[in-house]
Length: 487
Ligand SMILES: Cc1cc2nc3c(=O)[nH]c(=O)nc-3n(C[C@H](O)[C@H](O)[C@H](O)COP(=O)(O)OP(=O)(O)OC[C@H]3O[C@@H](n4cnc5c(N)ncnc54)[C@H](O)[C@@H]3O)c2cc1C
Image 1: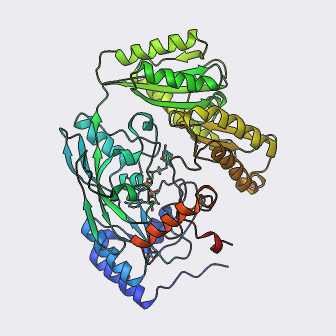
Image 2 (image 1 turned 90 degrees about the horizontal axis):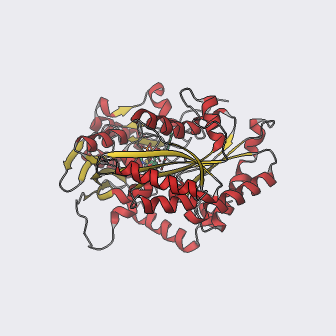
Image 3 (image 1 turned 60 degrees about the vertical axis):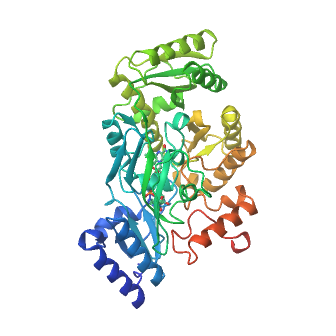
């Protein structure tokens, strides 16, 4: 039976008409074909419906439409590039929610090279901002697989991580100031460009990582850094898993903490990448158990980054921590090994159904985590294929699981929840987190009940209620209902 579309109440219809009038034809989308891709999350797990999509072009427009929606009690789902891995930007299936997509707010308002800052609007595409910073001889270091389509507002709202966290921190570490519109339409202009500002509670840190549940972020002052003038990368094969932690420690020291990335990949993932992804090439003759892609940045183009890397690898080889290494000799070869790193994600998709995790543990406990999680899932399901990889320099493992070769994908999916709980239990037992960088959204909301104390959850609910007393901002995301209310 086809569900009937939701019919807005007269009050909602009046509010939607006022919003459309305020935004004009460029600022409103309601034809089903254009809307369709914005109603499904990037993992194709959640699909929703909506009243329409508002596309404001200015902070004042965001403020006006939120004020109208607030008065009429219309629920809002803020959306950037819709690349969330946890269903955070997808409306629910009721058809009663209004999408607000920030894509038209894409101006860089100011670059202050001497202050090492850039003031940008929320809808700027991350890659465009990296390029803009580079054209001013500066680095904006946030970098992740979805950078060609995700927006800085979405990155900040979900406190994104990515491949350079080791050296520069998460998205929340890269912000000096913020502009946000509160659910009732009030604008908070906190676009300060200060590195020292010790004046009471830090509101911006509350909004960063709030996943669209407290406000709409409309602009930010981002920190910039000296542009590395050279990058020296290597793909190395480890003697064993524990060598990852030793090599990481040594690399930080040898590079004077200029290590930018340290990505762990199981050797067979490189084979899968070569088999399934066009252009990906496994550079080793043998399938090693564990490999690491590491990269050091240098602010002088004098070969010192390369020398530090070579010295490090020579020592690591002599000490028996690594058994093989590939050092790219050109920018093209360097891009190829980074392409391989990105390709292992697609390669796993082609190997059948998966269960994914984005956990973190203290860096020193990464090998224990992988060993204990492997033992736990193999005990639950012999034949399951653990596929752990990721930003191990930050203790962040994308602990993915591929279905046993002889199991139907649908059968594997029925074990998803039990597997996830088991893996999360291992991470929590090692003082870890169930979400290192993707956030909570819809997919991990109920796990919050297991990993947060009552004090923490009650404080989060109190803050949510303070900013959003009508519960209109991204309802149902991130914060679970109180324990007594679930069931
Ligand atoms: C191939 C791929 C690789 C990825 N790699 C990484 C990675 O390495 N590290 C990582 O951290 N993530 C990664 N992600 C996840 C995702 O790209 C990031 O979470 C990204 O920061 C989301 O940005 P977005 O603009 O797409 O936001 P969306 O998906 O549109 O939204 C994300 C959340 O933020 C809210 N939101 C969006 N814009 C605003 C705003 N202006 N104000 C308030 N709330 C807002 C939404 O409601 C939602 O809750 C990856 C995703 C893909 C598809």
